[in-house]
Image (cartoon, rainbow, N blue to C red; front, side):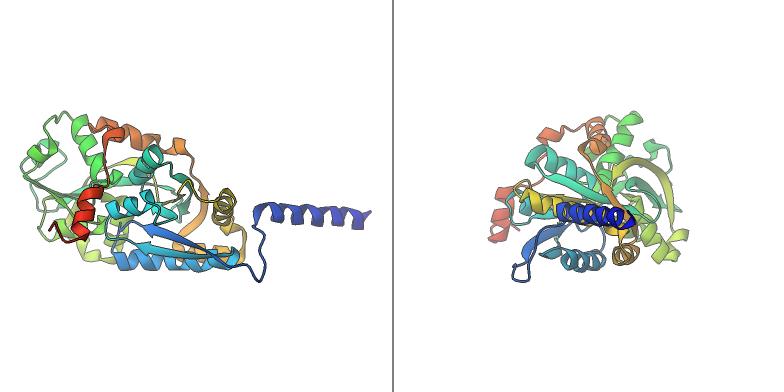
Length: 314
């Protein structure tokens, strides 16, 4: 009786593995998958963070996965739009834009060691600045934002202004709006007197402050708010459904194996969880209340970027 019960258990486990894992053979050529990353932090730090993920996924699936940090958010969306990349690790706004306009499919996102799978916007200024929580004191000041296609680094501050009665166009309200290029760069711009006010995602804000404790005496936080899904692994809709499901299950199952847990620990996460479309409703709400129509926002100026690559634009 015991042996029969044991055999049934073994059979069930084997069937489950067959359903979850792709069929492979020694002669099977590894599928190349190009994954693009937004430069939300210093590009070298961003690249290094994902290298361990590359090695792990390639060790359990018949894929040769490649992570590349691109120079800006617009290039990330461009290569996904035109099919030069198979997947991306996207911030919440690019994920929403990609779902609405390009049928990108969210697979999973990490639960960080903090227990959070979302991030918030942090708005900050220098300690000795006359800028305060009273948003009227922001008028005529310079504002550093990570990128104009980020929830935390752009849309949330503009939403907050509208929610507090500021109806003036942001480009008229601020003396200057400066695109820093990354969330940590926005923090450095404010700390070095290159901008009066900055906005960044809280995970990178805290990471940068922790690594540079001297900033504690230079930076004051004005507001923290919003709740946006973080670092979503998304794929293009033309990806083979079986491969897409294998990638999803590889991410969602990482915490179930000793090797996967080691990788997660180095990555700074507890596990990956599903990231369904409805989790991004908060992004849509903030974008709309900031005064923007998600259907009319153009992330990529294809003609302009083409001319720039050919040297016809500065």
